[in-house]
Length: 106
Image 1 (tube, one colour):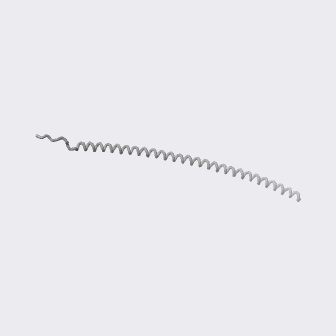
Image 2 (spheres, one colour; image 1 turned 135 degrees about the vertical axis):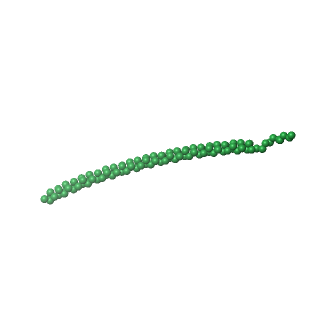
Image 3 (cartoon, helix red, strand yellow; image 1 turned 180 degrees about the horizontal axis):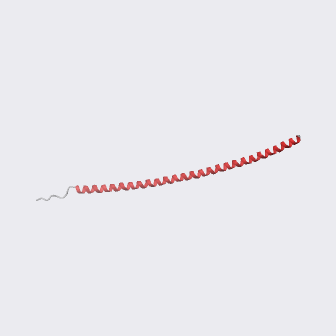
């Protein structure tokens, strides 16, 4: 009777050990998979962040170009307005000048 009990206990112990090893291997594989997925997620997030940074840089550059173009247009418009005003002032000054011709004596 003791021999059967002993053999049964050994069989149970071997099965428990086998199950523990299987569970340990499954847990190890699961942890590796989790870490791999986590690393992939971080990599994808970094790629997305880099794309967003580049997009923002491009938008900033586009805005700067537009801003500079608007400044150039404004400066040209001001120059043109000042030139027109200068010409208008000169014309008005020329037309309003007193005559320098001497009056004719009779």
